[in-house]
Image 1: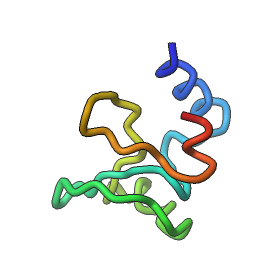
Image 2 (image 1 turned 135 degrees about the horizontal axis):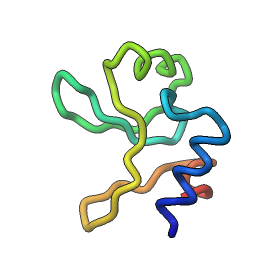
Image 3 (image 1 turned 180 degrees about the horizontal axis):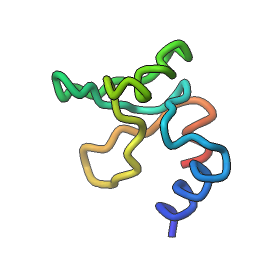
Length: 72
């Protein structure tokens, strides 16, 4: 149910090809994950350099920070 709410928010706010400060993202060239702390990174998903947040769950999941943590 929670996953659906996150997807619904992305759909209605037009965030599918964007990242926001506080999201966790993955670099395509290295596979590394990192906390988005700079809004200037917003063009990177459009260039397919990084993937936006993945709302997956498990013991290794990083919780988003700031406003995004409240959404999740």
